[in-house]
Length: 67
Image (cartoon, rainbow, N blue to C red; front, side, top):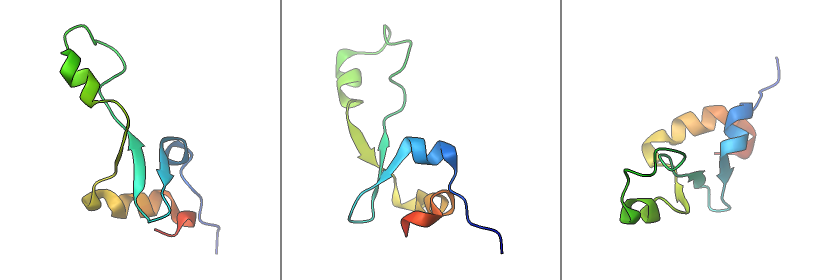
């Protein structure tokens, strides 16, 4: 059997937390920030968890993480 490989793009973008949840960065804060409100940009700070409906995809992309 061939080895299971981790998606290189996924290992750069996601981190698996000890409890099994997956941490991801927020989207929509890279450019075209002048038309976004200060409140909107403030709420886009920090990291959030990957939604539970997407955890199946995460398990396929990160097979060695034990998701």
